[in-house]
Image (cartoon, rainbow over all chains, first blue to last red; front, side, top):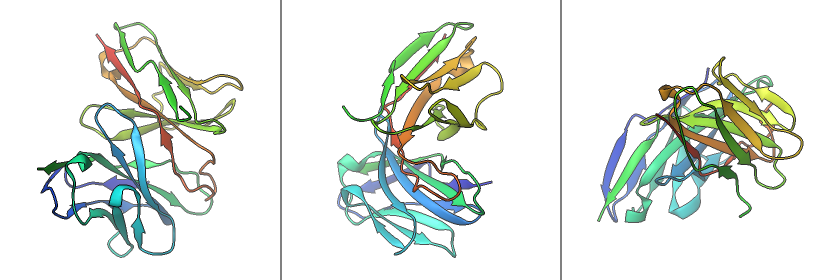
Length: 116
Length: 119
């Protein structure tokens, strides 16, 4: 079975500082990895994805994520946080192996708060 | 608005009543997914449908829950005889491709959710 772990329920960071939201995964086969963001009372918005290629993926709003196969991690990062980045962030994964059908599995989410 | 449209946004039901949640996917998308988000939890997969077919319902409770995606019209998630534990946000997502056999890159477009409260 595939799974995603977001070890931090809450991350606080001061505006202008770098931020990291952690994600580790477990899948069979090659992973497709995603980050989504959810603002209050809204649906999820796609931020970025890793399918193949460069381990560093750049996405929307200045976010990026680094795929680390040996550590099975896909941490979300941003060099300089904005107050408007405050939201709930979800990491998600699909694992592909031998033609198996898989659904997108989400982590439990990390609430990011950027303090002015 | 060309995005995923869900209605109603908020629904209140008493125990034992039926809840029907509707989802119109992005125009041209033929793959629909339903997820449930319980308070303080992440999203849990419920069901994956293509037009007129249920592809994967491994996340659906065995009783009281059903879903359809007819040839014409929106996808419907139906919950019969609701109980308090059904109170949650139900999100619909759509994609242009499926995720079987290694095809598709998995980007889903989400609606803003339907928030069900069972009294």
